[in-house]
Image 1: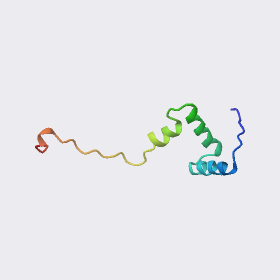
Image 2 (image 1 turned 30 degrees about the vertical axis):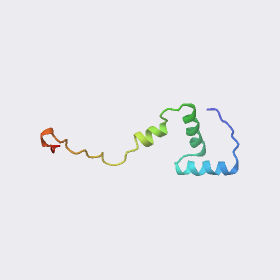
Image 3 (image 1 turned 90 degrees about the horizontal axis):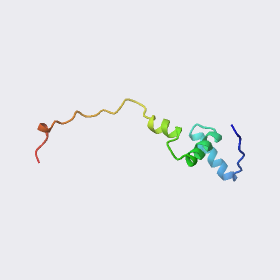
Image 4 (image 1 turned 45 degrees about the vertical axis):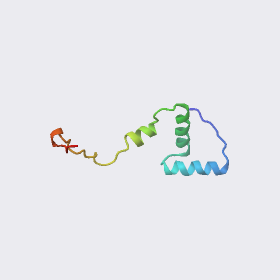
Length: 74
């Protein structure tokens, strides 16, 4: 994999690092996700795992459908 050197102002580098840590990623992984989202604006792996596959716990319960004859009249 190619390696790129990017120079950032100190305040921006610190902000990137804090965001990466809060996301549980290295700085490089975090920046890679950002670049990938801009180059290929589709559902990234992060989106797929955190949003689409991000449900934790039991599935939501759906109420039983109300049959037409049991509905209240207008």
